[in-house]
Image (cartoon, rainbow, N blue to C red; front, side, top):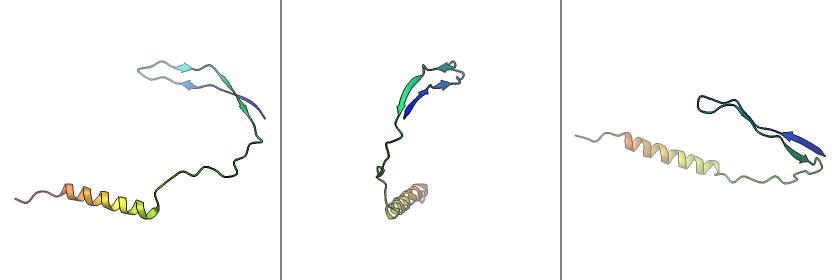
Length: 68
């Protein structure tokens, strides 16, 4: 357990000058543990394959030139 200070720094560019935020103290508790991490929903491998094939077919169809 403890605290940590976090501050953001921006190096700047042609449109904006460099900047630094005020530091913020954040409490950290090392006793917390995630026993079951949240699952991120995603498409199955089979669904991704079908989507890729469909997109490739649509792209190939648009590339075909009309016959004269």
